[in-house]
Image (tube, rainbow, N blue to C red; front, side):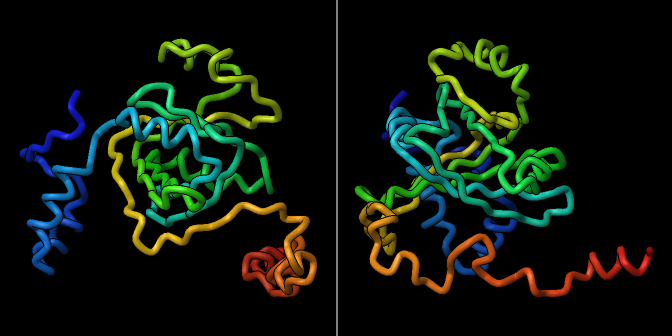
Amino acid sequence: MNYESTHKTEILPGSDGEHAMQREFNTERKAASFYNKQVLNELSPLMRDFIAEQEMVFVSTADSKGACDCTFRAGDAGFITSINNKNLIYPEYKGNGVMASLGNISENNNISFLFIDFFDSKIGLHVNGKATIVSNDNINAYLGEHGYTQEEYGKQSNIACYVAVEVEEAYIHCSKNIPLLKKANSASRPNANKSRFSGGDAFKAKQYNRPWIDAVNAEN
């Protein structure tokens, strides 16, 4: 497939709302150029290579009412794996035990990723799709269905489950205004232990009242 070819489809990508805003602000022609030159409904080979090099990603989900949650995920390069041009998979851990992303996915399977290379290209990649929760018991079967093996994927430990994503949209986030950062050993960072934002309660949130605690106490 020629990923440099451009053509206009009858049904454009994007939401009805963004199309309405394009008409409102007279950006339809500019948006159409972006759709027809940069937006794909799959991952190109270079997109897959880019994902394989990334050590972090921002992940967005929403519950059945549309309430949104954006979280940060990180790991070794390629911890989010593109097993082919239409499918991604990544491990989920228990973390703080809240399971906000998995909870949202269980109600609403729309998911969005934003990968950003802060250290070299300053390029970002948006990937949107539909998510499925895959249990540890079913991971080998899922990989096999997509022509992948556990050996190729790599052994994981302490995993709560996996999230498999069918890609629907993928497009660039340009480098403008993305800062170029430098990796450093956090232990050697100047004033690493003197920041007012440190520890598990960095925002001093423990001291605040919670309406849900008050409600429970009132019921009891």
